[in-house]
Image 1 (cartoon, rainbow, N blue to C red):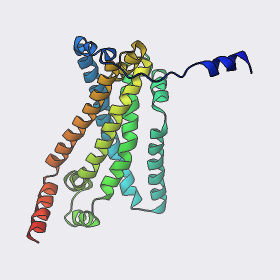
Image 2: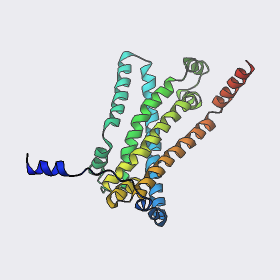
Image 3: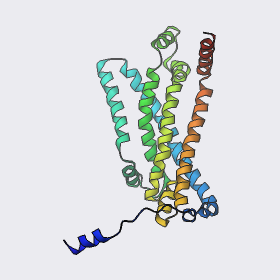
Image 4: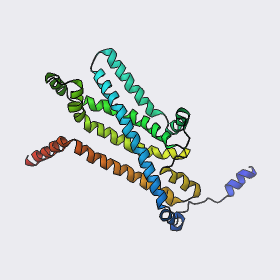
Length: 254
């Protein structure tokens, strides 16, 4: 048996020691509250703006794909190809896309614009699929009624199809928002400031409270934004709220 093997076998096992309260360095959170607030606002900005941009670009594409799927076989194949290509964008690793952005945009490696553009691409990818499902959820009877009443395509879209598609669209936005809040932290690996900075800095300086603060704030941001989107969905779809209330009233009577 070699000397190295003997030393390894002879070495006593090291039991994992629990962190003491003093090891957490809770005072760091209090003394750096302003810095934490700035990182939280930066994280929020980088997470929300790409969802808005991606959604605005994706909805026209989704409507086009949804309409083409109802027509000839060639157009149907083209719509499916468009949907598959947009879905493939989401398979690109986020860290790779963040690193590629400076080469494409000509920006600094630590520019927040890199994260904004990359997450807009991911949001676009998610919202194309959600948008197609949303427009497909509009009943055929609505399309027939719109044609019978002489609606122009633009009128039908803005006054009928889009309002009826709102619940599914908002469900997709909720998914995209929570996903973006999680992925923004990856940008800290290339130096873009966000709550992910608390992870990398806390790990490098061995400050567990800094890492924990980043985890808790990221979770709270995701929960808060999801709650706000739920309330916004209810405000945009009052007929759904009324339908649910009537259904519950009928169930109670039964």
